[in-house]
Image 1 (cartoon, helix red, strand yellow):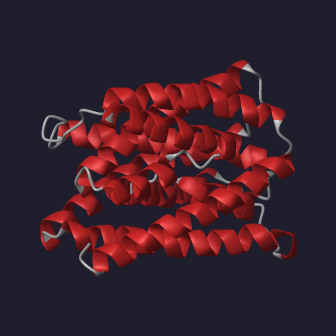
Image 2 (image 1 turned 90 degrees about the vertical axis):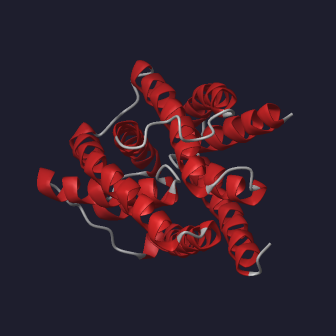
Length: 263
């Protein structure tokens, strides 16, 4: 029954993640916090494995479908996220070791996520009235990618809405173009995080029993989400993006309250 539950979580989250560029981890991480079956670091690794699988499928499908990909933006962002993914994973490990309290770490992660979601939701609802930028240059994009990689890895969310909103704001691209850039950034951040885990603690210290079910769900979700992204209009993708943000915000607030009350 547990495998079916996590398969459904993975396929649902990655379908939405592939469609909107959120990656899926932004849904998987807080949902797994709610279920309380695994510790903070294990949840982060499971989320990364799942999101990595989805990203490979989704980007591959976008390339095969000859989707318009702004490589001049996407590639430096992706490369910068490699360093960010490493930094984020080390930050999480250091905080877990320092605090020795899973509940507090969960509160910190969900509080940061809730704040970022609120900022992103406000921006996406009002971006028509907020003047964007048209950044260019590899060093700037590498720095932006590094920041996104840190958020992705530390929060265990794959990247989420932060990527899409920031890419739209900084580069003045459409939601669909930002979605592809976000997915490439997410892919490389997860490669970095999983590589860091493999070279430090290894994977055997984590309970990855549900990983196969989640990977199967993620592969299916990547195909479904990429197909939907191609068929949906820019406005439909944006509506889905905003709707999921509200859901994630509600879950994050629930996790904060429950952990603060000792539940």
